[in-house]
Image 1 (spheres, rainbow, N blue to C red):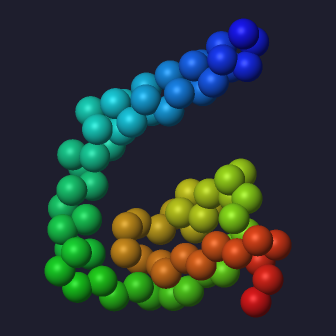
Image 2 (cartoon, helix red, strand yellow):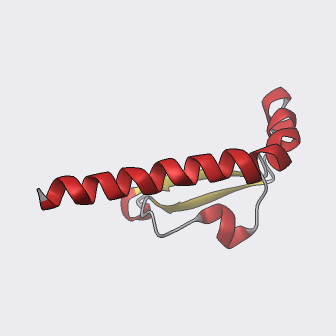
Length: 77
């Protein structure tokens, strides 16, 4: 019972985030996404961990297509 409530709450958070993204952020990013789709040209490569707490695009302030980001467990190369 408790686990199902936690799962429902988690799914609600995910769905709410998707809806908010589509209503607020996505329209502003569509032009950037279209540029990347026709010819991506990243300016650099960033190796980072798969840890969900590491949000590489926020840390680097990169826009879509600006960096090629490789996420590995423990940043193992």
